[in-house]
Length: 203
Image 1 (cartoon, helix red, strand yellow):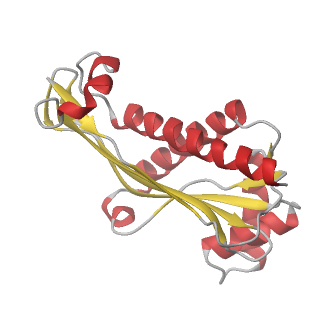
Image 2 (cartoon, rainbow, N blue to C red):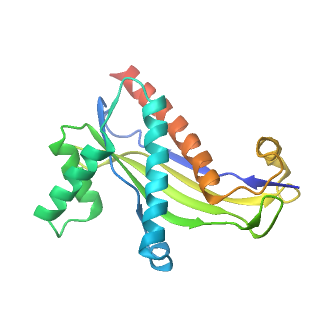
């Protein structure tokens, strides 16, 4: 029997002035070293795209009252800015994109682990493990408004009896890295949505 230790650490920057967020420029996920160095480029791109699409779909389905730029628009603008400013970091590139698209905030995701399970639904040599971070920046000054860190490796139920609900939801199976990532995306977007609703009420 198995479950998992779920971990979404959330930080809301409450010291700065509230930002009236009406539009968010959403950038595709990127991978960080050392994970970046452990995967072939083809495999890495596939995983980045999967997580990017999952987060974008969850955002557009759940977040109301805030315009989320399309992936096509954001990606096109990112390529344009990178071509014009090859020395910029990814963060600075996306911040520039946010300003160009007249966004109030930009959302950036980083993957630091995306390990597939080795085995099947009912037995594994090693479980799936996913670690990613999502940060929301003020497009005007680059300050972090909010961030969440998802870190989860599936465990047996005996190792973590506190996660019995997930054990039941997953039907006592070892899930794939993609399934684990999707669960993380749902948790992260739920938390972000609450922040955006609170932010909207303040403005």
